Image (cartoon, rainbow, N blue to C red; front, side):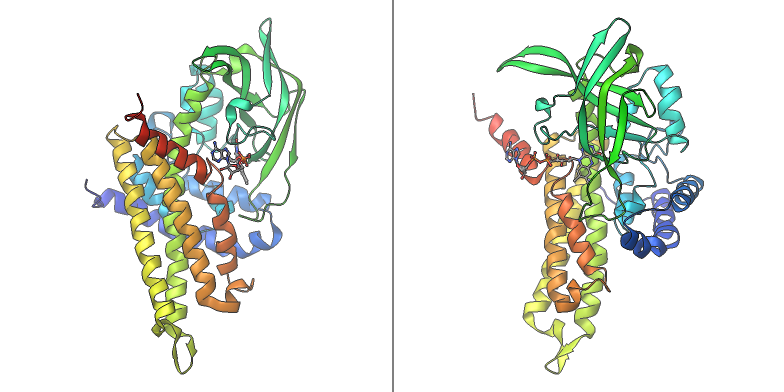
Length: 386
Ligand SMILES: Cc1cc2nc3c(=O)[nH]c(=O)nc-3n(C[C@H](O)[C@H](O)[C@H](O)COP(=O)(O)OP(=O)(O)OC[C@H]3O[C@@H](n4cnc5c(N)ncnc54)[C@H](O)[C@@H]3O)c2cc1C
C-alpha cells in the first residue's frame, strides 16, 4: 500500500482545502443559527463548486463528473469533513446508483445532476424499515405500462430540495433460503408527479441546516421505463451505493476530528489553572495523545479501504470497519474536546458543543454501528460455520 500523494492529488486536495475555508466556513455560524441554508447561498455554493471542479467528484468522467479514484476522493472528503455537513452536502455527490441507468435515464437524470441542473435524493428508509430494509412496505404494482406506487419514506436527505427521488419499493416476492422475501426495485420519480408529496422532517439535533424530509406516495403512477436497473435489482444497487458512502463517513470523520483536535490542543496549551496550562495535567495531556492516536488509526483504516477499493479488493467488511471506527472515533474525540474545554465546551459561543452533537449522527446513518459490527462479525464467522 502506498498513500504518498501525487502532485495531481495534492493539487485537488489544495483546491478543496481552500474552497472549504473561502466558500463554506464563513457561512457555518449563520446556517447553524437559522437551521436553514438560504436558497441564494445554496445556489452560490453549488455554482462555485462546479467552477472549482469539486462538484460530482465521485461520478465518472464519461458522464461529466470528477472521475476521482476512491483514494483521492477520500482525501478530499477528509478536507470537507472540516466544515458543517449542511454546507458540504451542497458540493453534491450524486448517487452513483444513477450510473446504472438506461441511456435515456443517464441523459435525463444523471448528466443534468452532474451539471448541477437537477438534484437527486435517495429513499430507502421508512418509519417501519430502517436497519431492516427488507421490511419496507412501499409498494410499486405494475398496471399495464405503468407502476402505481403507495407508501411513505422518512429521514430523506435533500428530500425537500430534490427534483427527483431514487425510490426503493417492493415489486413482488421471491423464494429465498429462509422462505419468501420481498423483491425490491428502484425507480426514478420526479417531483410534481401526481400522488407524490414531500414534507420537511422534524428538527434534528445534528447537522443543523441539513434538510431531510418525509415523502408520501398515494397512487403515484410512473411509467415502467422509470425503473432504474432491472426488476428486483434494488438491493444490488443499494449496496453499490452504501460501501462508498461508508468510506466517505470514515474520511469526513477524520477531517472533522482533526479540526476539533487542533482547537483542543490550542486550548490545552494556553488555558491556565493552578498556575499552569491545563495540558500539563496528565489527565488532559493524555486525552490529547489518545485523540491524536485515534485520528491517525481511523485515517489509516479509511485510506486502506479506499486503496483496496481502487484495486478491486475492498470487501463490505473493509467499508464497515472504516465507518464504525471513524464514526466512533469522532464521538470519542468530540467528547474529550468538551471535557478539555470544560464549561466553555458546552456553550454555543464556541463550535465544540456543535461538533459533539453533530458527531452523534455518524454512528446512526448509512448503517448503524451495530449493523457495521454485524457485517464484520458475519464475515469473520462465515468461514468457520459450515
Ligand atoms: C438526518 C438523517 C438523514 C438521513 N438520510 C437518509 C436518506 O437520505 N435516505 C435514506 O434512505 N435514509 C436516510 N436516513 C436513515 C438512516 O440511514 C437510518 O436512520 C438508519 O439506517 C437507522 O435506521 P433507524 O433510524 O430506523 O433505526 P433502527 O433500524 O430502528 O435501529 C434502532 C436501533 O436498533 C439497532 N438494531 C436494528 N437492527 C439490529 C440488528 N440486526 N442487530 C443489532 N442492532 C440492531 C440499531 O443498531 C439501532 O441501535 C437518514 C437518517 C437521518 C437521521
